[in-house]
Image 1: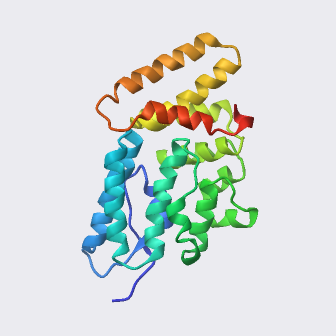
Image 2 (image 1 turned 120 degrees about the vertical axis):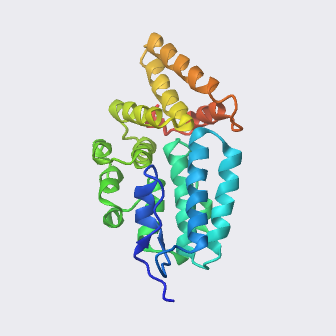
Image 3 (image 1 turned 90 degrees about the horizontal axis):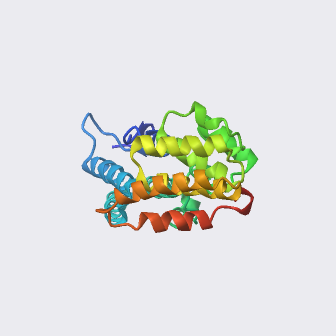
Length: 246
C-alpha cells in the first residue's frame, strides 16, 4: 500500500476547514482504516469538549487521537492533532506556545509550520501564501477577513490572531461573540465577552460592562456540570491580551 497525501481526514463542519488544510491520510480502499476513524472521532470530541468547557474529556480524547495517529509513524499527522488542539486555545484567547507541535516542527510540512506561526501571530510575510485563502487575510491584519469564513472555528481562530496582534476591531470582537454563542461554545464565549466587558469599562460605559458581566454569569451557570473552571480560564485569557488591545 502506498501512502497518499491527497485524502483529507475531514472532521465536523466546525473544524473542517483546519482539517482539510492540515490532515491527509492513508486511503487503501472504500473503508478508511480503523486508526483514521478513531482519530477523527476523538479529535471531534476533544474539540467539542474544550469549547464547551470540559477539559477532562478534552484531554482524554486528545490523548486517544494522539495514540491512534502515532500508530502511523507520521509526524505530519500527529502535528495536525497538535495544531487543532492549539487552534482551540487561540479561539478561546489562551495564547501560549503550541508545545506539542514544536516537538515535531522539523519533520512536518512548510504549510503546517506556517499555520503554527499563524496561530502564534508571527507568520512571516513570505509564508502567508502557504495558508488557506481565508486565513491569509487575517494573517496580514485584515479585520474584514472573518466575513469570508463560513467555518465557525476558523472565524474564532482568525479573531484570536487579530486580537493577539493588536488588530481586532469592535466588530471583530462582536462577531466572535456571536459565533461562539451560536455554536454554544461556552469557553470562547466567556473569553470574548470578557474582552468586550473590559473595553466597555475602559471606555467608561459601566452600564454596558455590567450587562456583559451578567451575560457571562448566565453562561457560567450553564457550566455547572462541566469539569473545567471556564470562568477562571476567561479571566486568565483577559490577562494575556496584548496591551494595545486593552
